[in-house]
Structure formats: C-alpha cells, structure tokens
Image 1 (cartoon, one colour):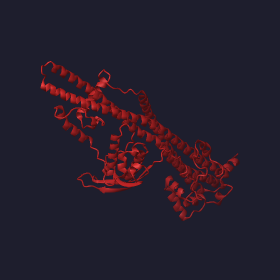
Image 2 (tube, helix red, strand yellow):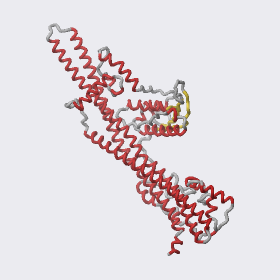
Image 3 (cartoon, one colour):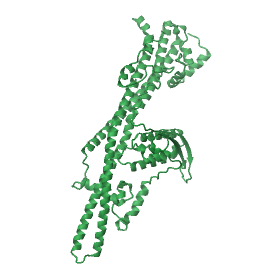
Image 4 (cartoon, one colour):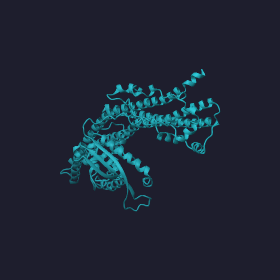
Length: 546
C-alpha cells in the first residue's frame, strides 16, 4: 500500500466533499497539459507505472490532425457559400468548441438601411409619491443607444433614458397607429414589480427583454420607420408620446357621456374620426352597445350581415396559421424535453466521472498488484473522458437552447397575429354596424316624410326632426366611408404581413435547423473523439485478454 503525505490526505478529504460541477469548473480552468487539478493528480498518479508511455500512448494523430476535414465540414459546407464551421476551429485548453460554431443570421432587409439598438446601464430613480407599497416610488431607467443611417432620424447616434412605463406607452401607440400589422408583443409587466425590482437579477432580465423587444421592432420594415419609434429613440427628456389612458378611466368617460347621448343632449351617431379606433376602447359606450348588438345579430339573427368576410384566400391562410400555432406549441414542448434530456445526460455523465475519480483513488490506495494499478489507470481515463464529455453536453445544451429558441420567438409572434386579425374583425364589425345604422336612419326618415306629407302645410317639429335625421345620415355616410377605408387598410396590412411572416419563417427555420444540426454533429463528433481516445488507450489490454 502506498504511503500518502498529510497534504495528500487533506486533498483527498476535500475531493470527497466537492460535487462534479466543481470538478468540471476546475478542469475548465486548468492548463492544457493537465486534465485534473493537482489534488486529483497526486492520488491518481501514485505509481510511476501509471505514467508509462506503453500504458498511455500519445493521442492518435488521425483524430487531431488539422489537415483532415471534420465530419461537420464535409456534410454542411455544400449547403452554403461559406463553411458551416471552420475546419480549423480553435479550441481552448480543455477542448471546448469556441464561438466559431455559429450560423450567421440571414439579413431580413435587403436595403442598406440599418437601425441598431442596445439597452444598458440600468439606474434606480425615485419619484415623489405617497405609495404605501415598499419601493413603490422607485423605478429603473435604462440607457437606450441607437445607431442608424435612416434619413428620417436626422442623425446617426442617439442616447436616451427610458423606463418600462415608457415602453408600455410605445407599445400601445404602435398598436393604435398600425392596426393590422404583426407588431411584436412587448415584455410583460410584473405584478409585484416594486418588490422584485430591488433584485439585480430581475433588472438584468428586464434589460435583456427590452433590448430584444426593441430589436424586434427595428426588424419590422414599417415599424422601424414609424414616428412613434423614432420619437421614443431620439427625443431627450421625458417620454414625448402621450401616456396611455387606462381602461377604467375610458369606461368612466364613456359612462358619463352615455346619458347625454340617450337624451339627445349629445350626438349619438358614430363620428367619422372615431371609426379608425375599435369601440372596445370604452369612450363611446353607445357605439359599443350598438356593435355588441350587431355581433349578436350576426351570430343568432338568422339573416346574413350587410357585409361579410369574403376573402377566401385570407380565411385559408388564417386557418393554416392556427394549425401552425398548434405545431409550434408541440415542437416547443419537444424542444424543452430535449434540453432537459441533454442536461440530465450531462449531469449523469459528470456524476459518473466523479464516481470513477473516487474509485481510482480507492484502487491506488489499496494497490498491491500491478494489475490493480492498471485497472486504476483505465478508470482514470474513463473518469477524465466522462468529466470532459459532461462539459461538452452542457455546451451542446447551450447551443440547442440558442438555436431552438426560434420556436419560442415564433410562438410569441402568434400573439401579434391574433391581435392583427382581431383588428380586422373589429373593423368589419364597425362597418356592419354603421351600415345597419344607416338602414335604420333611412327607414325613420322615410316614415317621417310620409307622415309629414299627410299634414297640410307640414309639421314644424317633424320637419325639424327630419332635418336632424338627414344630418345624421350625412355624418353616418361619412363615417361609413372612413370605416370602409380603415377596413381595407387593415386587410392590406394583414395580406402583406402574412406574406412577410411566411418569408421570415422560412429563413428563420432554415437557420435554426442548420445551426441545430451543425451543433449536434460537431459536439457528437467531439464526444466521440473523447471516447475514441479512451478506446485507443485501452486497446492493448483488450488484446492481452484475448
């Protein structure tokens, strides 16, 4: 039995108390020529026989030669003008594949215009308020830096500070001004924001989410040139866009206006300038009730509505997008399962490596025969390979998450698709309601004219009512024209957005699949090489046993 110094005893005790994650971390930071930390080396290599070059031959040159192309190069180079990964990709001392394993994203904009945005430097600020919630008067602002060559921006670099509340306002204004477009959804607002805002982790997560959201907006060909986004990114000081009015306030305004409309003290017809926004905003409850009535008549009235959705191509594409959402949901679940499985495989392999590290230590401590030392050498090789393979699985998992995140992004975009289609349905309902309202007004005017014609000299009160009806008809006709134009505009927005979504989804999915498959092949090859080294080093023992 070998003699171990006091220092070695301390090292062995410390090794028993560390998990495989710490072993991996130590291995990653160790030098290229040393795959184990010093403590592990001392108890594994306790006998010179273990360092014998006959037992530990040098690595197979065929596995390491930079001149021989990797399997990844052979398979994926023909798919693109450039190789998927470099055939001489650099690795660090522990064999990690570096950033060369990348699939460059396709450019979505064929023009030379660019709009780059970074979000950084979160700072806590306070505002005067009487909030009783701890931290309720504290908020965080972020430095938003923009670089662009778009002429409308009248400059090339801008830096402004914005808070999350400003981003909410921007999102609301974009949705109001661009009905029918697939506008990327903004990050959610936390219900307990004032409490969690004190945590740096939450602030960093929000910074990343805001940067990702703003960059998504800049990728949209119409949104990136919108006045709302330009003002948000360039104007210094407080947010220049008017803040959104909450639903409760709008409903109160509508409730206060409703009695006057019913009593005739206020105009009850739908104004032309109001039809460009949906009735569900709440400012005009009478219009909301009229559209609700029209919706019930459409569904249960037994008669066809005055105007229907007749675009069969749109209805087919809408149905296909609904099916796509289901497929994305299923694919996303399977992607999460794969990530969990790869994580578990890496964890299990690391635990196996640690188990063999401990077993190697035991064999060396108890070694009497040379065969025991040979067995310890074999286990050291397996332990080394298992720990390195565990690290490679973790790296592969990070690549898998990066590439398959495209599925989650397109799932999130389906919320924007639903919102745009809802704009279309709302605009169509407004047109139907106005046409029904016009029909009712014309019917009332005809009855009033018939009744007035039977009275010699006419009835002044009826004549006055008739004039009011004619004015209401004129205003409603104008509103009808505006509503139809708004509906046609939303239809055109939907059509162009569906085409754009199809093109981008095709490009995104090609990039996703190429990146995913390339990383799987590259890391599988790397993992295979690690086990191949072990097989090569132990091949001599296998021949002796035959």
